[in-house]
Image (cartoon, rainbow, N blue to C red; front, side, top):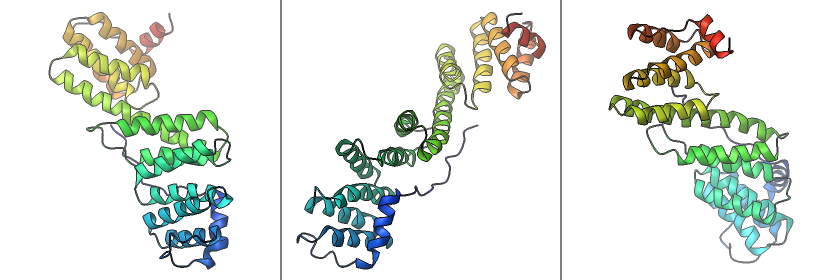
Length: 273
């Protein structure tokens, strides 16, 4: 069964950006003179006011204006990250990713890089589609969150990213299962075996492994190689003895005249006994 995509949750802001926004909220003014050079504090405050009003794109443009007019100020650095956040909130994900990549390229040593990676991953994650469609966004989210876990394992962002990694992997495994079942229904058993085996090998911690092993049993029996079918049933019985998929594999092997391993014998075989 495929896991539903979790409800969207608003990512938290880095403390420095949030503090700056709160401190300057009372200074908000008009953005009509956007191309007249103004103090960075005033530009930032205008953009923050637009963000508070949920004018996401307007806020993003306002934060980018801070950098345009004052590229070497501390406000410019904050503005870059806040522009990306505003784009994300407005579901302008391509713009958010572009802004985040620019921020990380310009400030690779910033303490806010973990947050930037997290927000980049979320920009892909929010675009994950159902398993019937292309999974490019799922793969991009997975790569980004794994990079975050690898580079900044002790951050709160990495902890949340780990959950997202698990869900993304389950989603990709679900896609492989869908394709494998399609091939199986078409009688293309070798192609089906390749997909189901990939789930077993590459997505071992997902919820789809028990079914993948059962589908391998079905496919190998259809191909006339009962020894392979029994081997996968043994792995299934050892790892998931209480699974409905093992019950089905056990019954299927017996119906085809193949000596079916019980959970006890499967455990012994898997352990080398």
